[in-house]
Amino acid sequence: MSKNINHHEQETVAEAVNQTEHFIEKYKKPLIYSVITIVAIAAVSFAYQQFYRKPKINEAMAQSFVAERYFRADSFALALNGDGNALGFKQIISDYGDKSGEAVYLYAGICELQLGNYKEAIDYLKKYDGEDPILQARALCNIGDAYAFLQDNKEALNYYLKAAKHVDNEYAAGYLLKAGIMYEELGDIENALKSYEEIKAKYPMTVEGYDIDKYIYRIKK
Image 1 (cartoon, rainbow, N blue to C red):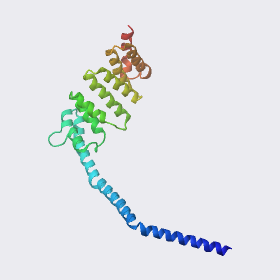
Image 2 (cartoon, rainbow, N blue to C red):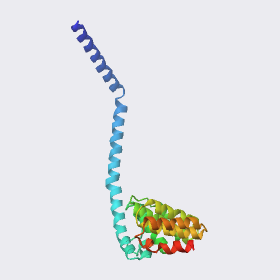
Image 3 (cartoon, one colour):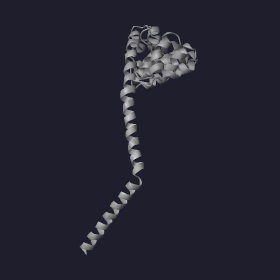
Image 4 (cartoon, helix red, strand yellow):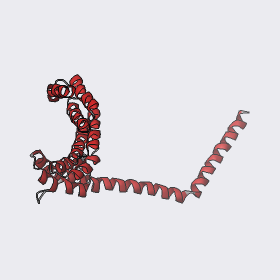
């Protein structure tokens, strides 16, 4: 009985092997082409990373170094437009995009804001999508500032509130203060008071917190 079973198993295995060999023989060329395609894609991807993307990133970072130095020195025009030798943030973005890091949009946006180019500042700042919540909140606040300079108080208020909600630390006090002032500009005294009282309750030890009583007193009076 066992011999019959073993013989049957052997026949089954032999049949499976034959089917596999037949499958391989039938689809040998497509299989080879598939393997070649996968290897080629992997090779192209590796070459792109090693010989194009990495050098581009290094170039972008080298160019950004000089622009950042001008930015830290408050030389916003040189930081944005370059000095004739090194590129500014505007050209770096045009040539390399965000290969030097997302912060390039934040730098460019702040430069435009400081130079009074508010619409351009908004365009750059809205492209910034960094992982640091403090810097992201700062970008949102700067967008609010740009809208405020454009006298679009509703949008300014919208971004100040977004900035305040984005971080729960002492910086939020400044964003709430700006929101309160915008509420007043829009005639919404009730919400202005709420913003000021939130500063008093949550951030009393900040610079804004020390002075907030005069804002509250003025409204209540």
